[in-house]
Length: 25
Image (cartoon, rainbow, N blue to C red; front, side, top):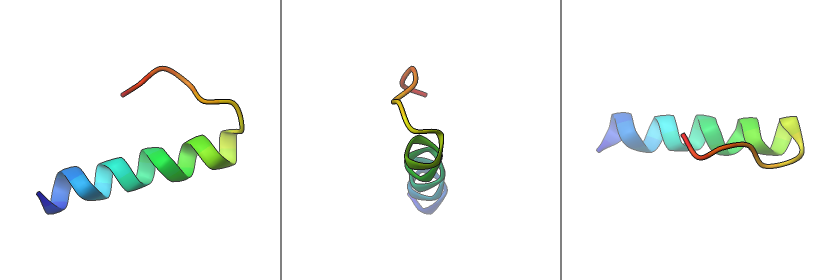
């Protein structure tokens, strides 16, 4: 759960930094 949560958070931060939402990973 911790790993998935960390990955999800990393993707979420990337979405905010990148700007437009990319394909769901």
